[in-house]
Length: 88
Image (cartoon, rainbow, N blue to C red; front, side, top):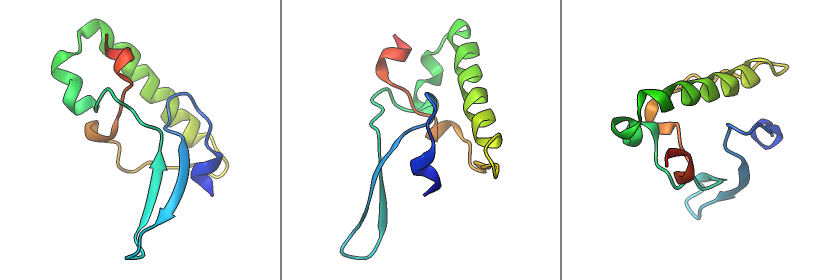
């Protein structure tokens, strides 16, 4: 599938897919232990925010540059995730 083909350092890697007994589909993604940008924003300095925004822009550019382009359509602070080491 499309998500399995994505390879970018600022986009979560799809590790697997499973179907629950209720026939719900679940995606297994890499674990990001640093929380979301929404959680971390109060603790992020102005010096840290520019590299974060730049990484987001690189990831969106990667998606939009694919053939066909991939549009995220739901880019919100609560789904932008971090490794804890990034916010030290």
